[in-house]
Length: 341
Image 1 (cartoon, rainbow, N blue to C red):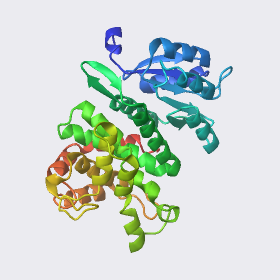
Image 2 (cartoon, rainbow, N blue to C red):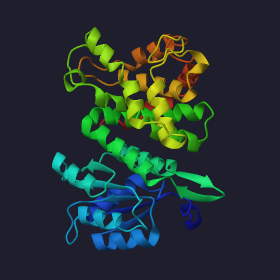
Image 3 (cartoon, rainbow, N blue to C red):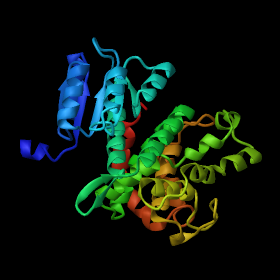
């Protein structure tokens, strides 16, 4: 790939004192991003200021400055403070995560890093960075700082509350992106939807632990509590005029509406359901059924596809079901990539 072509790719800076780890990151990410590498914290800070990468992958335990110290330094510098930082480290526990988020990190990945997990997190955080910018007379401007802070805080809160729900949300976003492109959305719109979908189950934070973590099927009262999560999520996100937060709120509210009008919370039907909600509904059910839950085993692929097809005109928009069936190989590729998550 030519230097000119690479200049148009998103830029990622990887900082790690172990060259084998840097080599692994290169093998996973090369061809899709312009890559920069540093073997220590000081060099990482220097490259960050010089090159202004779109994303930083940062080890924690390094000689000299630790990753936490590097991140705190970056967040104090207005030139680079907005760059998202993902910690990639073998030091992976609740205390380390809390320290990393306190230092200003956006996410945490454990070593040895999984290929699909790294790719999904990188895509998600780059999409978030894009969604937090808008075109204004040809110049890119950041949204208000409080908007960026709110998105980051909500994403972190979701992961702290329930890691399984957070990983489900990331996978659903990737499936929704595929279906959105098939439905005619452009790449920027599809990426924004993928990012917004990360908050579609945010309202689960309002469901009590004994219900959320129950290993048996829920009773009627418990199901009623869970059915409140779209409205709870929308309330947490709040009202926004535009941008990824506005889309997140819409998706949170509408991903359980049904084409036939029997869904919740508003009982919307047909085209009254926003397209984004209809897209996420299929992606959400596909991921939920093909994964084991606390109270049941995963459905087979044939069972899942048959169920979605049978719900064409019931739960799901028939036109989107047809697109789902046509683009099933792309869903299967993503599913295979995420089996370790």
